Image (cartoon, rainbow, N blue to C red; front, side, top):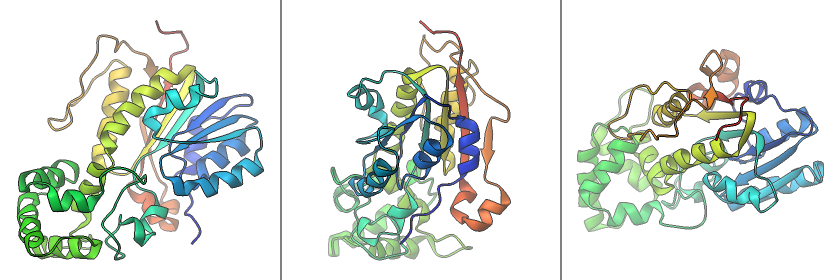
Length: 311
């Protein structure tokens, strides 16, 4: 199966504005769509990061197409500072992050991300750490409810958690369809959205520590960007976008609404370091949404490092 075109590709290039001799980080490489576009847009260097070892095959193609200008790094984008430092890089001109699960991962039943295909209940973006089945079968009822509520915004989280605990007492829950049917039995079907959507989202985010990675990745990007450097972030649901919005506003001197679930601790060093262009966020065009429905929920935010050096 051919990998999908990355969302808002034109908007990403316009926001990032790659320049000749620039150095850029693609923190969520995936199939390499953003990296390839950046490399074609300017005679620049790109360091691509991904914690999914299956993306290595796409990196090999870019290494052949852009020798000496492209480097693939295995790891989490939250560790970008140490990863690129191994190559002697300590400041970059731009960073792009596409947050969340990729369409490739969703389309691979053996990865266990999607309830559309039956597969092992895994959900790990890397091949390490605790998988979703471990959590579903060992976490307490209250822990499961918190996962579905705080990370998936599922209003029926408590009832879903109860049903899971009752079901696993009889038979371990090891398959995606098995978990999805339990959730559907509690929530029922209303509208076009599958009732398991929010709970699967919450479980995936928890398994991969996605919010922690995003918050740490934003701080790492801040420390890596040279004056005038640009940070571009694409998110796919409101909780992620809220984290990015709070970060950009705090770094631009206007800390806005706080989340009681995901509080952001403002630091003494949070003097304005960036400025926000107008509009503050972009969404996909109607034409792109028609061509790629995944882009419907995408939100892009960009901020630019102040020209002056910051102590």
